[in-house]
Image (cartoon, rainbow, N blue to C red; front, side):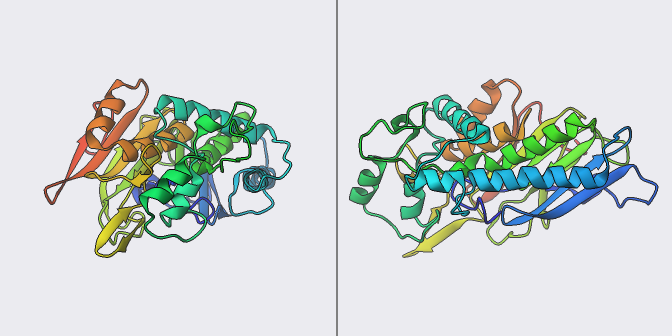
Length: 340
């Protein structure tokens, strides 16, 4: 996963299955941009047929978006707007910061506080945030929770508790948001067939073989650290624009005194979650939505996740869970698996 947004709320990215994009011939109208961003690599594949914008200009535009994301939302770039805001310094939020903050408030309300980007210090005390930590006491958790939470920040981004500054961490939606922004740019220049993978995925249209994109879903077991090395299944798209994001607990955890601590913290309780859901893959119209809801499902667990997916319009899901030592899967009615 990305080191830039590598924290407790970062979702585990699904990998584009190898069969989704075979090697291009020189005559192909498909192009690919790759590089480093957000602490990892990115890949943007798209069809340039009918597009008048040159590749150099497209590359420059993508680089510009990634740079803006870094200087606005990165918790590791100490000069970013987010870092300066968290440090209590003077910040005049740009449009991107305001948009992501607004989205975060919406998700906080939709999830009843289960998705809370203003709970950064909780991640730190459990050892999965921007600093190292250890197993905290109940007293420590309570004291941290007293100054955390989106409900303690007004819509103007000013704390409602005098003398406090809840610290923001946009990791739950930042990578999905980035994929959407690059997809929006590609749309603006006439691209209709694309697969944008910036840690999380947005895809639309068809691949070079003329069929909708397919995305591999990693098998969630301890030790499976290489995306795409061992797949549990393959989601098959239908050509419409979709964000596809997987979140899981199997790659990010730590052990202490013989106990395994999940990297997913429930901000409503202050403790790591304890349930049998191993990973959640969400398909939604936007990658930022899929990103947020995949994390939400990992907070609420199997039964509530199934209920949420089944009752939410435009959202499909694939849940992998442990059943007394046996790995099992559940897919919503609209989640299409390749070969089934």
